[in-house]
Amino acid sequence: MKENSIINEASVIAESMYEVARTIEANYSFDEKYRTASKLKNAANDSYFYVAQVTGAGKNQALEFDCISARKYLNTLKSMYIFASKQGMADLEPEQIVRIDKLVAKIDAEQKASQKEIKRRTEEELKPWLKKYRIWQKISKD
Image (cartoon, rainbow, N blue to C red):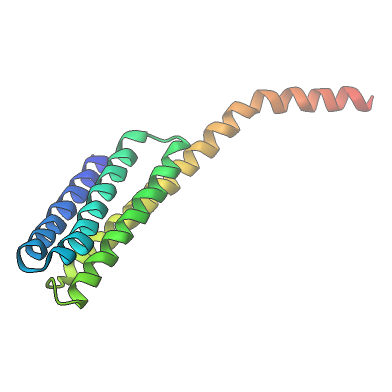
């Protein structure tokens, strides 16, 4: 199932970022533990949370907010990971960056599919009203 692959992928990413955070906590000062490792963990938690929200939302208007939030926190996670590697606190694994980017693309696809479904449902719900409106227009012209 597509949704399960999204949540599973988010779980793998969060677990790997927690490993990076543990390495930072074990090897660096308290300040770095707090600033970098904590922010990395928070971004992993938040991205996982919002991906789970996307998974559970279904095709509705709330999904758009969840997708935006998931994308935001996944990009935050990626940025913190890159920052930690540039500061020499973590080894940058390019496949992790690719994995995050692919998950963001899947989230974007979910959002687009949801928007199409919402538009289809809205048009379907409006059909009877449009029919009545056209009848009213015709009567009003006569």
